Length: 324
Image (cartoon, rainbow, N blue to C red; front, side, top):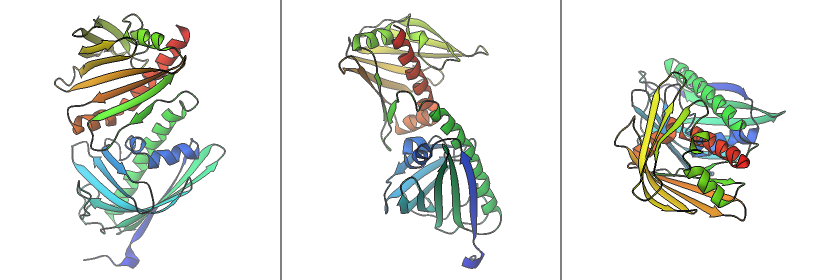
């Protein structure tokens, strides 16, 4: 039996985020940012495509801890920059075709199209976000959606806290295009190219910047030449070890390094990394391109928190270069 329009409900959630409105807006409108928080606890978002304009379409994949994919799509109906977004919301297949759907395998299908309105209001450096999700039948679907949004907003708050801590420093920019097997990130360092190359490829200096601070890094092998092998081991405070290794394919000081990268916890998933250093007249632009074996490998790596780890490494490298 179809629920009458008069019986459909609107879910409304208001949350205050300790971040400027521009940063919260970006979290909703830039795919690489939205992928970091979309979905309840334990869910990931391995695919996100956004054509952010009135009439543009989004397609998003929300993956459960059991590996089930929940695809959603919609059309942007209204966009007022930094103030308001109105977008339709429908369950879909991986090709973006609208299909009947439910939240978390509940019993009744939702209407084929719901409507989401997000309003952004800034006050003294914080942002009040009000979400209205209209078109729910009464009952467990409405309750499930409330729980899902609340947990997603908890993850968004955590992501914003991380990003807010780095907004006053230089930024690492990421390019993660949907459907491609690669991730590219760039960073400009206030140091000459020779110094950047040496700091990156010196086994005595690398442990001072490679990876998060809470891990202890040991370089076991670092034969920086074509055909040379490298291996790095990191240990956490509990004594757990994480090994990484690869082979240098090309070494052209101080311009370029090409090498493979493999995390020993997931053997067989090999990435090809190309690091290019561009001289900017006393400063250096580093571009790192990582090509994965499959799109799924790429999406899984990015969803696992790669961006946060790279950002921290690049921040630590910048601090080290200021000293050396």
